[in-house]
Length: 249
Ligand code: 76R
Image (cartoon, rainbow, N blue to C red; front, side, top):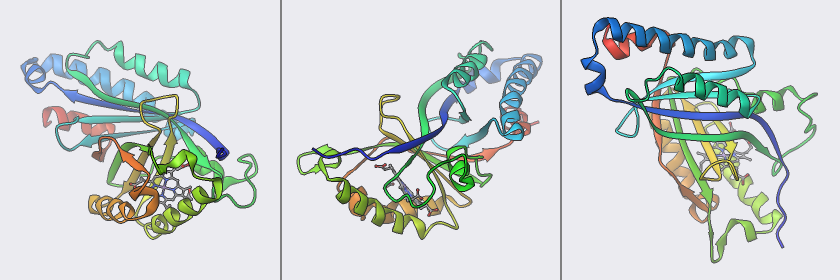
């Protein structure tokens, strides 16, 4: 039997993707639009507070393509806090306008494949920054869920620990070439959502996502063992941009 690797968990994450019903939205009167905008902005400003208070992290992204229009991304200490966040938005009663097209629930995960030295986040500030990440303020984000394959000889979970460690080492070598241009946040979701991991990448240029992910496809950890879900790419936006995005004013 192959042994699992120890993992350390940090903040819980909720990727919340909304599709706007533009036909309905544009039919609303200016006064109604302003009321709705103010209600959304006040909820979202509350989430954004977590960045200042370092009690979590929040980012809002304008998505490209048909899979969604806006992504709200919240990281918090507990699932209860994420539930509160979700229900705060639900209570606005604008689900007909801001339809939910996808969501993903997971928890920041660091595995000990390549761990060296102090693995205690209480005394290791580097580890703390990774477990409780302040979301990078790069121009773009790329998010997708993925699995490690379990098929015939290409079964990640029947590889020995050393085999997996070597594969992760090679994965890390490719990834590290992008250290200055990409920040990755890996969240684990076994038992929490439909895929096994969420990959959230940050960069100033979306082309870098393509270059990195293409290069990684040739690496054994991806070539033999990775299956991917839908990809979402978005541009980071401030709360103050909401009004401009939705009403051009
Ligand atoms: O944590 C570290 O930085 C150490 C090395 C490392 C680990 C353990 C690392 C580095 N990753 C790790 C774990 Mn990663 N990563 C992905 C994807 O598209 C694909 O082919 C796969 C999606 C990308 C693009 C990416 C990028 N990584 C993981 C895990 C958990 C696996 C497990 O536990 O079994 C997954 C699912 C995963 C997937 N990885 C890096 C990157 C980048 C850019 C790096 C270098 C980080 C840096 O040096 O700054």
